[in-house]
Length: 252
Ligand code: 13P
Image (tube, rainbow, N blue to C red; front, top):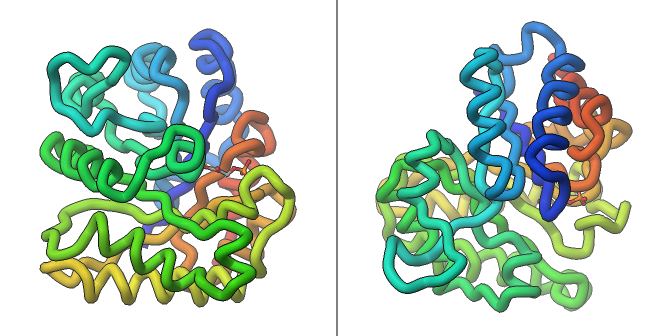
């Protein structure tokens, strides 16, 4: 089964810097990468078009994701970008429900569910982020939180495509991570819940995100239930990000 590695650039880089980083990543990748791994980059909206043009002109084996999408399809929603507009740019993926959107922009599960549906109707792969806070983890609520985040978005849906990214909030940008064994168990739990929650018993790929780097990547990637990674800070360095992808490629 093909693995997926997503680089989330967050609010960094203009479109020219984005092109440079894309080219640096591409240059540093193992040559046989595409048989085993889908590489996806999520720049700011302002870079989507430029990166997509470089990828199609140079025939690069890299895909582009939006970092977010509107929960509305069209109309008087100043500042929003719709799934339909993304599709017109040949964008294949969109992150939704990232903890930074949930905590800084008050996005609740209902909004995330609406975004999920907008992407579905435009045939864009959802990268649905879920994860518990430090407080929730310390009070033993991790599985309840994940259950609620999954059920409120996916309950009774018939899924065709959708990825889940397990990102414990306390591991994002902190240098702290759960152990690979813990992530492996939680990802198994997520797969079970998604299967029992969806109308068609959909078995998703589940990525891990939170302080992934080239030193810890191999340990995560050798776990059975970790189907890839969502990488933040380390994806802003082309060589470093390519090393993470190459680590994955070299796992037997
Ligand atoms: P870091 O890799 O910087 O911890 O960020 C993870 C993340 O939020 C990816 O979406």
